[in-house]
Image 1 (tube, rainbow, N blue to C red):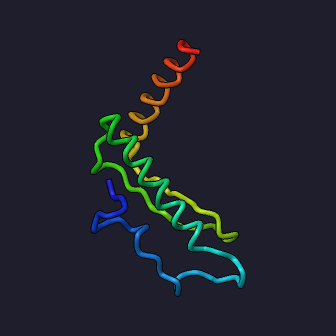
Image 2 (image 1 turned 120 degrees about the vertical axis):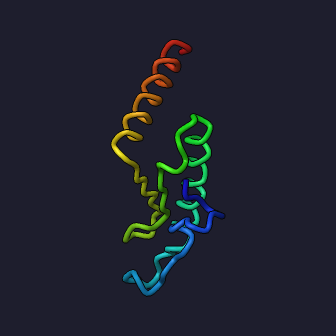
Image 3 (image 1 turned 45 degrees about the horizontal axis):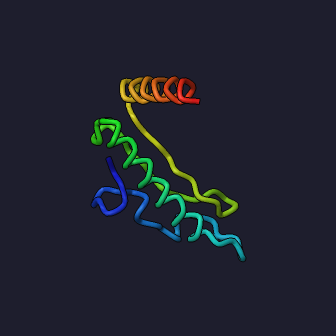
Length: 96
């Protein structure tokens, strides 16, 4: 998985010239929040034994400065993640 600290982590390179800046909007705070969230998601997917080479996570910001995490994966990996989410949801319902 591409994640903070990895050489290929695309979200770690913030290109200020690639976006339209609005005065007074704190884009960096949103980007930092998204970077942390992407790392958490990466850790969770790794713990669930999702093939880390099959997933790409990118941190970014929306036009209002809020953080955005983009998740990219193959259809097969998406089906596996969906299956894992259904299993986890079933266990949570049984426990509650």
